Length: 80
Image (cartoon, rainbow, N blue to C red; front, side, top):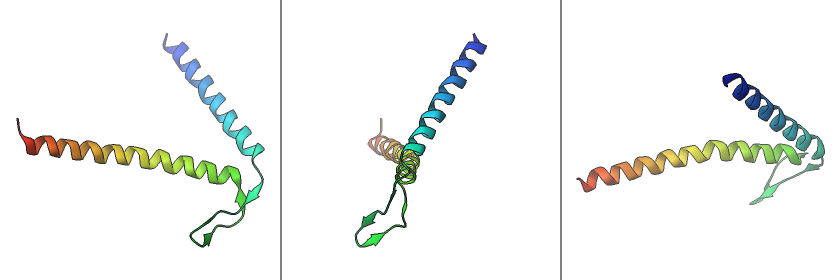
């Protein structure tokens, strides 16, 4: 059973890697992002999307930890 799970996990990873690769290869059009008067260098669309994904994957768990810590402090202050 463990071998089946490993094979399925490996297949899922391969499918995800191939999907990301296809996305990157299909989105090579260079763009410039502008926000509040600041603009970036011309980079492919896929770079901006992947950077946004990675940023979200890093920020999400940080916010979760902060809200859990806040809830624990609130419960501790309220007492039993």
